[in-house]
Amino acid sequence: MLQTRTRRRAWIAGFVTVVMASAGFLLSSQFAHAQSTLRAAATAIGKDIGVAVDVGKLQNDSTYRNLVATEFNSVTAENVMKMDTVQPSQGQFNFGPGDTLVDFAQQNDQSVYGHTLVWHSQAPGWVRNLSGDALRQAMQDHITTTMNHWEGDIFAWDVVNEVVGDDNGQLRDSFWLQGLGEGYIAQAFQYARQADSEADLYMNDYSIDGINAKSDRYYQLAQGLVEQGLLDGMGFQAHLILGQVPGDMEANLQRFADLGLKVRVTELDIRIDMPADSNELQRQAQDFERVVDICKGIADCSGVTVWGLRDGDSWVPDVFDGQGAPLLFNDDGSPKPAHTAVLEALGGGEGDPTTGAPTTSPPPTGAGCSAAIEVVNDWGSGWQANVSVTAGDGGVNGWTLDWTWPDGQSISSSWNVDIAQTGSSVTASDVGWNGTVASGQTREAFGFVGSGSSAEPAVTCTAL
Ligand code: G3I
Image 1 (cartoon, protein in one colour):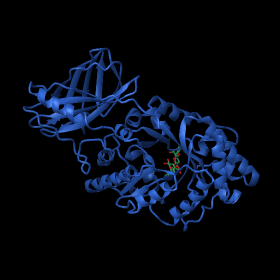
Image 2 (cartoon, rainbow, N blue to C red; image 1 turned 45 degrees about the vertical axis):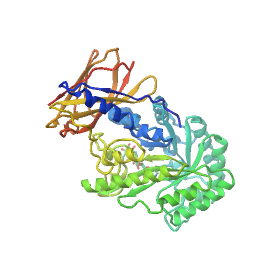
Image 3 (tube, rainbow, N blue to C red; image 1 turned 135 degrees about the vertical axis):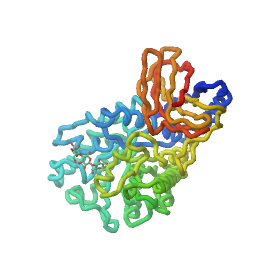
Image 4 (tube, rainbow, N blue to C red; image 1 turned 90 degrees about the vertical axis):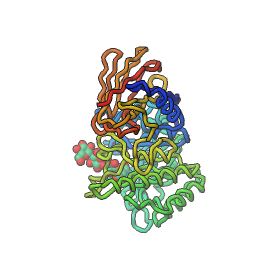
């Protein structure tokens, strides 16, 4: 995993009355001890927190782009590294969309997990019509050309995806199996090893999160591939249902780790019958926390990737009628209780993991509000700051922050906030849902990416 340089600073806004100096100090020391993004918290404990990325949204949606950049240290292409995109016609390779993701990841010091080389789904028509030597050659060409293209950029690949069916641990009856026989799995790994000897090679599937006939079959396959030195990791997709994190998930992942493999939760989402009520969202937070805890507890668990960013980005409602809300962010980009829970499980955050409640900070004396700007990531050419707002007596129902950059800095992007920049003057206002802060409470309000020096601004918070 690429390491980010992380420098932590907290800039404390002036309270509109003079009594905030001491409260500001307390906020400063409090923030010095906890990471406030998933990314910073995961990086601090040497784990990946990943997200499956839709490249179209990455290009066109700034809220999406900023959350992907600031909350995750690893990315996976949700679709664009699959065979139907990469090689839509035989011998015609289309790496453009995948390159867009790789470039983005490199600009943001994120690792890229490759998904996927050999899969029965999202495979182009031309390859489905081959068999025997022609199919074997096509498999080799696809693996070799794709892995060579992204050699050094992609640290791990799902070499084969979903090769076991749902029927009592039988191999999936795919065109790959029909055309090549059982040996195609080991063959795919041989080609992958030859193509890029540095990349970690994984198998990946769903419904293998606990111990069952399907995961037992993978265990057998893994033993064979490990003996041949062909397998490095096992991916557990973890497309889960609320309340159904398998009780033996930790034992299951551990048995694969005990074979000398890395393990990874590769496609985590936890779906709920819609509409989801607040109680279900709290229980979902606990389920997410449990999965992250499991990975944290296994030294060879390389990380957890969530399968999509905001609830509305998920594949779930398209496939499971009446189910949804399976991810960490609401559609407006605001964090769900599950986000707070994952942050806490990774060792960051300061809120209550089961409620997602805003952090309580020492209540300021008097009315009005104060704000704290905390730099949580610094990658040299830019830095990310998170901003919290604390309400004085009576709470606030909207806030505006004003500051003037002392040293020519600027904001290149922001989320969960309306920002107006005129020269070096900045005005930042709430976007509705994050305007309300109860009396004496602090809430994580918004974030931004800045460029230029880190000289501290003097910030004024005005309560509405
Ligand atoms: O791009 C077209 C668009 O042009 C068209 O208008 C639209 C109409 O339906 O379809 C779009 O393509 C869709 C594509 O996602 C991009 O959104 C496909 O129909 C749709 O089938 C495809 O679904 C993807 C699915 O894999 C395909 O099997 C999901 O986004 C993706 O999340 C899902 O991911 C899989 C993992 O790869 C493997 N594990 C299971 C996981 C969930 O199914």
